[in-house]
Length: 259
Image (cartoon, rainbow, N blue to C red):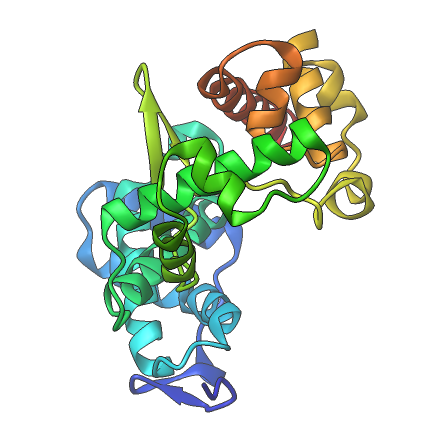
């Protein structure tokens, strides 16, 4: 996928405008009043953001023009749903919206569709594998996993192979009491531990503003790279509670750091 081309979807990427903060604020006030021209200017002023995001999908076989168009759809959705009262930068809100839109496009256009039942089998196998590994301190065999969850090992192998295709990190796994858990909540963050973003940003003051439980969860998740399931087991609450407390803590820290 060539990203060095100057023109994408008829847009000369070398001449895309850049908006300063004052211009963004002024344009968004006009957008809230229904000014369509301001909306168009705001979209054009954020096309560089879309362009930078689609570079993350450079390994995709999809046409860069198609990804750019899909990214623009995500951008427009972000503009239409952005709440300026939340004291969050637009780019912070827009990036996951754009990425999610592109991931949904890649998933929906994947030639191999993975059924819900196959995904459920694969997730059960993954959870059983983690539990057996923790219990026995060794990598479980497919037969052991099959016995643990009561599913034929052939079906487990097939299901695990099927989900090797790209799956959105925002794919819901299950809900408990209204709290939805996503695939991204099941993944431990071993790359972005304190060596990277935690040490790069001064978080001591932000962490000190959290409750002891929230602080403990953040440290276990991002300092020690544990999954939400592992944290839930360690502090004896449900994974859904961990997810809710983690999101609340991160929001509090973000608000503190943006002051």
